[in-house]
Amino acid sequence: MLGCVCKENEPMSEHTTFKIGGPADIFIEPTSAETLADIVAACKRWEIPVYVIGNGSNLLVSDLGIEGAVIHISGGMCDISLNGAYEIECGSGVKLSKLCTFAQEHSLTGLEFAWGIPGTAGGAAYMNAGAYGSEMSNVVVRCTHIDSNGQFGSFEGEELAFGYRQSVYTDSDKIITSLKLRLKPGDPVEIRSHMDELFKLRKEKQPLEYPSAGSVFKRPHGNFAGSLIEQCGLKGYTIGGAQVSEKHAGFIINLGNATCYDVRKLIEHIKEEVFLQTSIKLETEIKFIGRI
Image 1: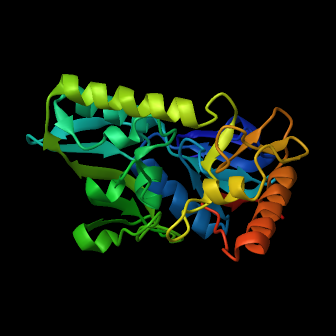
Image 2 (image 1 turned 135 degrees about the vertical axis):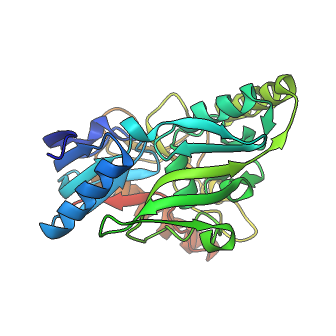
């Protein structure tokens, strides 16, 4: 199909950090942004639903799989380069770990917060990922995208409409293909030290030894989801193979045999219990896709 890698009935459990998910009808890995544009346009002509994934983090896929085409952003959209003294341009498929290392090696600071986040640059911009007081909106100045007709466009500055865990791309049909980031000059040794310090904190506080989708809930105003869940006595609460992490209650982990059903039931139980005890409504941060 259009000169790209294309598979049928591909198990999504192999492409998500949760290690959960049934088969995608069609699984496509485009070799370039131009190929992606052709694929998107073709899917629209053939009325095939399209879902886009990067590293598969922040994602929960149905046990029944996904109807339509899943496009895995990788391959030709993993380029990265300097643009002037303090700007980086990269493909949306570049992993955040690679992007952070590139910035550090070129004495650019501002991305340290993203070190250790298991996602791609495009996915991080899509949801305005953040940690430790910083987020993608602090560094992303421009995004190029493809719309549902396969046409290229871009947004920059205020057009990106960044907010808490959202951007202009959230819930839109546009697919980010590349980004421009503006950073600041820094000392590479100090940058690396800060990266290592933040990763140490992640390792100490987050259940990195288990499959998960990352933080399950958005931060409620004036509080922390993990603290509320722990306060409600839900640390370690288990349904099937899904468990509220003993290390960080804001995470749900896959003990090895968790299903999407287990996770969704656990999420609903957490929401109900937290609301019952605190009158606070938790909002999920992870995205569910697939057959119901």
